[in-house]
Image (cartoon, rainbow, N blue to C red; front, top):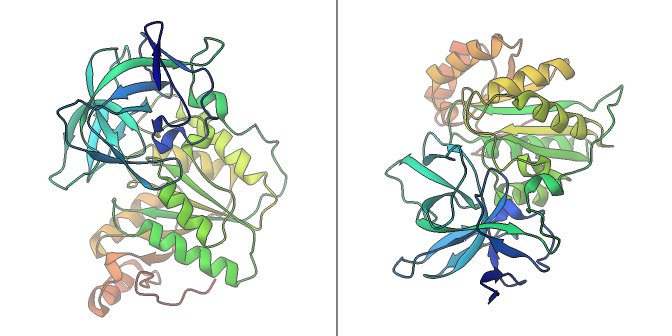
Length: 341
């Protein structure tokens, strides 16, 4: 990376967050004094007096940002119930102003609050401006999305993993479901993290168990599906689902990040119910009462879980209570209980 004519010029060694994984290699990119809006690529500098931090590289590895480093990232919203909450000012992120890294994939915005949990990525950075390509056009996620796909008359079966909160075992449940699908001769499985914040590490965990392709909102042009109750999110979800259901696969496995109420999960479920008659739902819940409440919420969408899992099944006592209260089979996939479809 160098300074040419007063503007930063980037190279293949310039660090970038994994949210920019679909962008091509740098070629004549320059930083300009323009606001960074949602999905637009921006350049951000970690202060010289900061401590080193880690973010997720496009490869999925943990990458260190040293004091003074410049990284490429984008503006995005986040509304985690357990980690960080932040947003984008209406005018975007302005050059020479200070913002925060809201997620280790490279989401930057105004910090509204965070939990006491330790976070390796949370640090203030200075916005240097937006990044333009060699033709002077702004770089953005929307320029590098998957091409539209034509709807199909007979879509593959859909398996949907939902949770009552963050960190209740949704990905663990999805991986258990993926193993069961492949054992049942459904070899070609597409994995989609439909809502929440991008994570290449999570996508790689699906890929390691044989799913392909493995996708999230970034592949369709958004860094996250926040804020909740976002206007106009339905066409985005419709396009995402149309692409996935048009692929030549035996099954589509969908995980919704976050809980049932945030990340626009309700809007996603509404869109899903319009195109998939009977998605098979696995629910990960924190405890028996959460499982019972989530069952009622899902009933409003015409959905009934076929299986309950998560901490609500951690011991024989709570597993039996959950199953009795909800009238739905409950098994602990984190412990390796066998799942047969």
